Image (tube, rainbow, N blue to C red):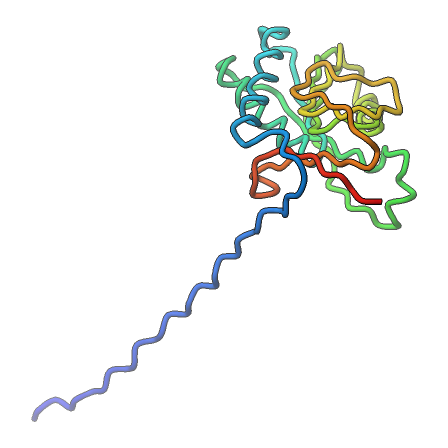
Length: 206
């Protein structure tokens, strides 16, 4: 007896993978201060100055202030580790609860938390932020650091010092120094957060 013919089940159609969403670069208006190439050069310059003062990373910790301060710190750390040929201790600071304008942030401010998985007593700290403005962010960071221990020293590293200081705080390492007005904004754009690489100055209409 001939075997009965069997019908093949129709092949299942593969579901199409959802289209990958791409984040559009932030709209940039104003004067470009640093191009992508100049930004890379500026970061290399900061790292070189740090290495000159700290020939060994044994007692060194690099702390980035959220958000772009962390990105800048990571880039500097990568250069340092390549030069030192060893790892550099690092951490992250979220200064939200140390801000002197916390009451203005609303009842539920976004908090990511800080990461300092080591004892900072007598350790030399590189405190990193992308833009130095009034000095209040740095003061908040210093207050938080003091709650973790008593470091040997703290050095402030910033990409741009835009002036307009309200507190007696100065950068020890700075790639670009500007004299700006209250109605101007300095925007640091990183690929990791903005899908762009540049620094530009924007004038806000009042």
